[in-house]
Length: 227
Figure 1 (tube, rainbow, N blue to C red):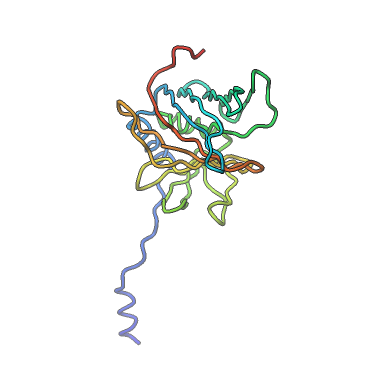
Figure 2: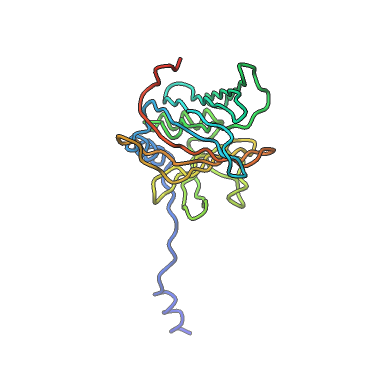
């Protein structure tokens, strides 16, 4: 018996995952955003793809770290749709007429553009999240720091506003919003001169089909025609 106890005592103990402070995670998110060239005004050429793989709309997203994000789309039937997001505020018009219920196609990109630890905290707080909380989570094969925390139980059953950030790849994985809306981001793609942005993202929203937005091109700056 003493021999068995000695062997057990000498055996290596399983590694315990260390959760960094929320401030450290926010700082790393901000550093990654700056390094990826995202913490500046950007214009993205996008295509919206339906569940059947067919294009639903195309247009451009106009992103700015300090201004509301905008998405200008031409739908397959020729109509024009305009999405604008500022924190939890989300508005949609179609041919200049307000739309009361529309699929949320524009993620809270402020989390991908925030260039400082304080800006990351503010972007998450604007969604109703808790910037001082960090949990661990898995999304697919990605081990994530979950800034804002998550609910106990299955990783896909989270109702807390949170930003899931890949510990190893240092990339955005997903954003969860209150009410069950979720954005999952694909691997980053490089755009000239040195902008790294998710190649696509998928929208999961209760009562809506699962659509994907593909980022076809990205450039820095404001478009000349943007208000």
